[in-house]
Length: 287
Length: 287
Image (tube, rainbow over the protein chains, first blue to last red):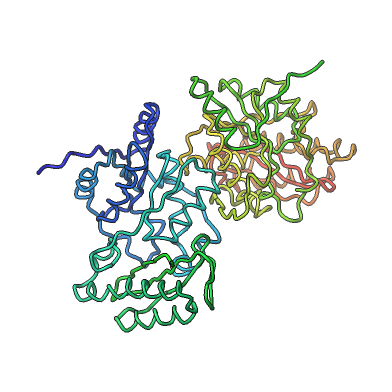
């Protein structure tokens, strides 16, 4: 069955003309920024965007500024034609796929840093990451002028950084988080899962299992330090390593909780670890 | 004679409601960001705004983020009622005067840096300055959503930094520079001139004279190094000191020119020096 084709724009002027035309007609607009390599997780963001706005725009841009030199920028999976088919299949209205030269013209010299919530966890493991994310997301939000923008809770710290960024810069947009989409065995969907061998993919189930068990134990009044240690042990036993972090944090600003029980705090448990050559991240709400 | 009163808003929501109402009625909007302590120089920016847009909004906000701890944030002159009268007298339509708490709410954590053009001159003398300027100007532009924004060439490097910022972040605004307003003797108008003693004010004329002579000499084919040295000598003889810089730079990106003649380059000569306790800056086009 043939899919409907998806309108695609590559320049800011074209993008704004379409978004402003929709707004002038009284329609609200949702932006879903992605790096492509789309899977069901991304499509769930499009669906949430469609629930919350009249029109949805997906962007695909593999942002070089959020990769360190040793990371997988060149190898990151790309396939715009297939991505466009998937977006059309769930009713996305427009694809914005800018070129690198259009996003970062010669002489580009501006960097945005979000302190605090960006500093631990992924910020400590990947020092360049959130600066690159904040800069490109600010640009995309300013370019597209959406009413709402949707980001996955899979990248929970990123969601919190972007909410802080939008509030601090007074961007006229609501930042929505969408629940993590998971395979039947509980493994969070991720473009980087494509790097896993079949054996690694089977072992990956230990990550959501360890987090779910840890979240249950913390919610039941367990000590943060012993729960985190048990999760690390479980991940190592399943073949993960090195383990960057397994940490229980306050759900809003990601400040540290523990080492004892969390009491009435709203909490999130977050983890990052390598499985073979692939670095996986996941997180879950506590309680 | 009584002045017309000036509508004043203190919150982003009120500001946006007014600007969007004007835009919905087909009117264009100019923003003129200031730190108050208004003088004829600021009023010339309002007049340029009125020439280029249907409505003009002036903002007054003494931005703590662009002052270092030893600088004059607390002493910086403030007088909103008088400023509002001056704005009304030249036909400004709206004053936006946010509180510090509204601009930087608890938990504020975002910083914007513009590399390159912000690094020499004022950036070297005041390491905190342009980061603070870029952050507050980005916020004001995002808050007010103007079609054009006007900045004085008196702060020439700041103008270039803001043009770079607006281009890099894709802000949908045209950044206009307005010629420096000067007293009859040539001294550039500045809120900080209020700090000068009468004797210092008389001596201050050496700054525009030295720059005008230097600009003439460079345009006539003189060597940059000897022209700069002569200007430094003239300023020191007039009682200026220490002299932070007197430099001939490329007019667009402020890269270094010289030490020989500049040939066909488009150039600006910029200076900063203390006169007693007051730090003065000025600049002029070459040719």
